[in-house]
Every structure is written in structure tokens, then in C-alpha cells.
Image (cartoon, rainbow, N blue to C red; front, side):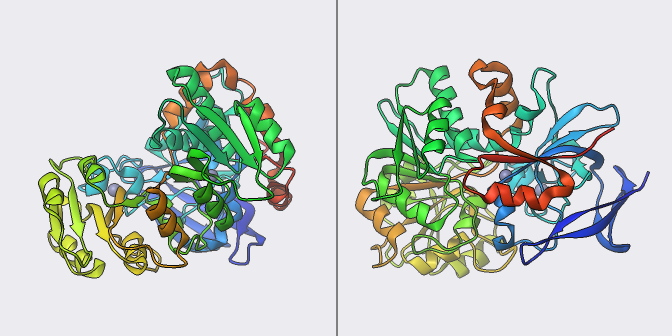
Length: 470
Ligand SMILES: [Zn+2]
Ligand SMILES: [Zn+2]
């Protein structure tokens, strides 16, 4: 049954404009999407038509025009979907071959990196129209049934909670650590709650601090599990925390995080802007990369992509690789990142045309290794891989300066495991009122512009829009 409906699309200026969308097709044949009566996008098989019941507004939605994906687009990716029976589902947003349940020889979908499938669209972010519209197309394998014990205002947090959980699982927390969450709001509050849950479950002894500029946010963070709160509106907090999770969504926030951390900064922000002297940090987060100074330890701990026996380290620095690198990894030696890309494409190690780590020695090569500029450009580092810096940190590039001076590691993460997030919401009593505590603003979908305005305002933690459903 084709559907067509009026909704609002996000445009390159950041304004929301009325648009008419139509979906025609089915799961097996694929779909044609029309926009204002004209053909707009052809989707292959593996998508199911769903109704959107509610959709959260996230910082990515507000910064969407800075992201390297085509506009205009109907956005919204924190969706609660309804099927024909009125059953509720959360939607994993990456429309990979795997999520669409399509037979494929895609090396990414086959090596556990489906969330990074190069052919994927992303619900409400990259081409695939999202849940701020009353109808959308979900990859068939991306539907996660929401248990009846999870109320709708908790369920709408499943997507960002999965992302928060991924951050907590990606960082290394040791006994006695001081872990700080910078910018506890939409996502950061969930990171605080997830850290507290992690501590309850593991009995690991670490402290949780919330760093913000507003007393009301600090208070909420404390009620969600932070032990201490620090107002960072004045001076930069200097080296007080082993780990800082940067959820600030701003370039200035990353500077604060780098100043405050002694061992690891975890980046959760995709604001599309250069920060700490380095471009392409949004792509860094999209690919869930890590950056650290080259060391024996770090190379030894490098994990290879699925199907590889040893890590593949691509050495593009001007110096010769020391013997301890080739003792614990397979080394590809090239003179530049560009040459490396060429070599990996011609001879992909174990089918995946990427290295597990790339060694660079300049800011320029670092940026090249993350992503040569341009939408959809190829990066030689495997998603979730590492970039090692083997040079001297240049003046004025504060990211590299902090890295070198404090031996900091910069890690990052993006989406997470929906099943684990749903588990958390059903198993931990302390999270029972999470939605009630977090959601400060709620609007009908026709008032999406008001929801965006509210979400950007200082008094908002989380804004949600709802659709009228039968
Ligand atoms: Zn989001
Ligand atoms: Zn794929």
C-alpha cells in the first residue's frame, strides 16, 4: 500500500520547510520515495514501512547542516515505531546490507563492522527519511521489539542510551579512577546514568563527576548517579580526571576535556566543526577511531579485524618502523597516506581494504588518515581502528600537544547495541524514571520547529515530538 503524507524537512539553512513525501513499494521489490510528487530516492529491498509514534531530538539533529550528508532531508533517528498491530519497536539506525538482511559479500558486513558498511544509509541522518515524519522505512533487521514493561518515555531514549552504553564500554575504567562527563545534557545525562549502572553492576570503585555550566544540570546529573559536580563556566579544570567523556558537542568543550583529563578523552560529539587544531573530528567519531602516541604497549594491544590473525599497521611516518612494530603486527610501509590508500585498495589485507592502525607524523597526514576531505571519501583506517602519532606535536595544535605531554588517548564512539540498552531499561530499577527525569519538553510533530528551538535552549535536557497514532 503506497502512502503519501505532509511533513517537515530540514534544509541547508537549518530551517524546516513543509514537504510532501510518498513511499511506494515493498520489502522484496524495494521502494521508490517521491518528494513533492517527483521521484526522489530509489531504495533496494529490505525495508519495512512503519509508523512513527515518537522521536527524540538530539544534538546531531540540531547540527545537521554541518554534517557531510545531502540536504534537504526529513530527519529524526531516535524513533519509536509501530507496526500494523500497534506493537512498539526501537530502530537501529544503520541501514547496512546486514540490517536489510541482504545476501552480500560486503567485507564490512561480514567482518563485524556492519554499522560501518560503506553502502549504508542512516535513518534520519543520511538520505533515509527519519521519524519526525509520521511514516518511515525501517531496515527489516533493525527492528527491536520494546518490552511492555518499558514505558514510552523511557523507550524513546533507547537509541541515545545505546550510544551512551557504547561510550562506557569503549573507555577503560580502572579501580580508583575519577571519570568525568563534560556537558551532561541530552546524551551526557544518559552517560552519567550508564556509568552509575556500570558501577552498580561491576562493583568497580570509581567516582563519577559531572562538569557543566548550569546548576540545574549538575543537580539532575547528581540524581542520576554523579558523585560530584563541577561548574566549568570559569577556569579550565586542570588534569583532575583520569577519563573525561566529552558530550559537550562544541569545539570549546574538547579543549576543556583535553585540559581536564590525565589518561583518556572520549569524544561523543559530531558537530562537524574543527576542534583543538584538527579537522575531520566528526568523521573520527563516525568511524569510532582512536588516536594515541605510538608506543610498544599500544601496538601490542592492537586488535585485528575479524578474519585477521595479526593487526595490520600501516606505517606512513618518515622514520623507519622500529623492530618491535613488525614483531607484533603485519607492517605495510608507504611514504604517505595517499600512497597507502592506493596500496590497500589494490591489495586489501584479508578482503578489508583498511589497516587496523595507521602511523602518521604530522597534523596534515593525521587529517588525511581520518578522512581526506569530501563526502564519502575513503579512509585507510578501519572503523574502530587506531591512528598512532609518531612525530613531535606542532605548535598550536592543542590536541596533539596534550596527547604528547600527558600521553593522552583520544577515543570515540557513536551508535551502540540496542538489545543491551533495552536490557538495561528492563533490569535496573534505578533507571525506572529515566524518561520522566530527562524529558523536559514534548511537542506534537507539527510543531517540530518549536521542538528544535526548545532542544537548543539552555533549560532543556531532552525534547521529544509525538505523532498522533490510531
Ligand atoms: Zn542522536
Ligand atoms: Zn555492507
